[in-house]
Length: 532
Image (cartoon, rainbow, N blue to C red; front, side, top):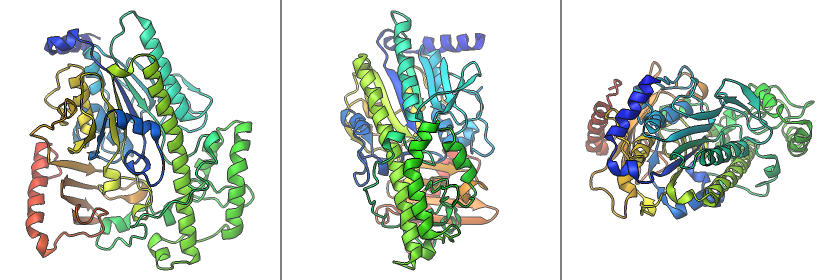
């Protein structure tokens, strides 16, 4: 307690006088899991409509080049909390990581600056949350149906209902209690961390029929053969052979269903439903499952995507596209519920008179593959998982509107929130405050012209090899490394936005390649990454 008080005094002493006397904005940070920009209509209108998420962008700003530092849930969250790359905050991967909660974090610095802080929803950092005056978190990944929450006193209890709605309920309840606690409540920073849209995309029961009349177009690179890209060919996240027929597409009938690697996990998830809820769930998925097994049998060999692609019109190709459609429909259903609940949160802020003095941020912990390269999941430095949606509704006094095209990263959120709070930004934070981008119509003359990425989790689920790299406005250089791989990839993002043609080693790219190597090394020195 003494250390916390000392930190608070130090921060307050360094705060600008205007920040201590003026009304400082509240911060509502909404982060989803695995929500990709392709499935948000402010970015892409091909698949779904997200009017409430788009409302944030319409009334504020949309970042068109928003990236993560490590495309994996726990590490991405650690980067956000600390403003530092994974090798600096110590949480590099989900398999063996435990977040060191004793280290400096942005919520602790906000507390010291006089903010009330709260976290509700997914934590996924193993250790107990620190830096929050209030928290209620899901254990590990959490559940979609009737989820259990861990409370600040260590107790656990299940809440009835759908997880996205429950998290929103808890967030609104906390804000109401915060505003009613005193006549002059502190400014607050509320972190609303949703489970959606994480695998296995279980919809709210009232949304279970949505999108069943939709047929989604295949991405142009759906039938990728991974030529010239060794790491892509080694991965295990193809919709064709790696998407579990029970766990992911929900094809389960007691008497017909074969055991799969993940079928027990699926039964645990839907086993949380109350009898009446399970009846409604089964009334939709069981007939679908019966039709599936009657057509395809129970021991069908699911071929790799590139094998099926050579048999257009074949049974393999038909099954592959069927799995894609089931994936897209269920994912879209989860997004629909998420969009509704974000709208409800915005409506509360407006009705409570809080909206105009609140920074509302919506983003995801990383992007996701919706069939691009034949994949689901994330992890790679390829564009779909490197990028993430980022929209903000700005508090009064910040006039920027429309698109912001500078390159930003999730290590930037910590210094941004600190500057908005009037708190000093520690020198060891590696991100850049976005406040200069939010102040007006013009952009700052000096901004980063490249971002650095590093992924560590291998061997692990989906078998994506470790890699690091640099992305500039035009080019991307990636190095895959480890005991079974040492491969470089170079892409021209202007002429090859889908990253199908590895140009590394091509004579005509020698000058660009050498320049990208120099710039990569400079970033590794700047961020003090010992991998170099």
